Length: 110
Length: 113
Image (cartoon, rainbow over all chains, first blue to last red; front, side, top):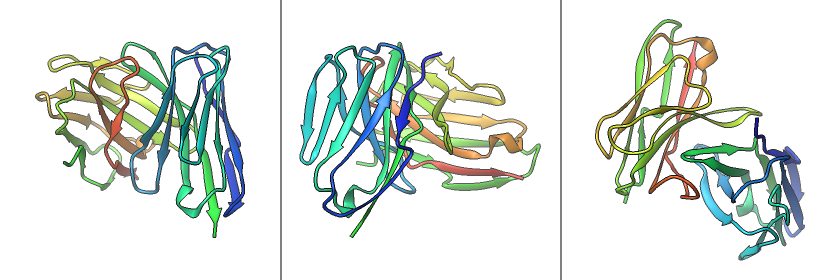
């Protein structure tokens, strides 16, 4: 069974701090996606990484795909209250199926 | 541009009752999905429809049925609700399979007592 494990499960930080969240698996994936979900809403795609070692930046968010394509990280620089939400990693597993991690719930205090 | 629209937003059922969750997308996507989200377990795929006229089981299909009514609409039916089906249900669509990003609706929060 393919699994995505995210850590930490919960993170509460002050505005301006930096943080990194992780998504790990023992399986190799062709790509990995990161979504953000806000309360009462559905997940929204932030980025897709497809090449081992790839780094993508989205403003203050930096996403990296592991060299072996088994893991990924999301680094946020100078977190803001607007970054509060549930961050989910996801991996297409072939055809039309995508598996999701359980998520990291981030709370940024002003 | 509404994207993916789900109804209802909230529902309370008694054990054994039935209901249908409705989903419609206006992005001309080929593929549609139903997921459930439970605390600590992430999103799990219930059923999907790769294209109009086809449906397939996902990871947790037991107790559910689906209908792909046309290209826009994909419904999820609970014939005899059970407390284990208490969850938040999300409909999603994508242009195609593989790496195509999923576009989600805002969910239906279902409680079965």
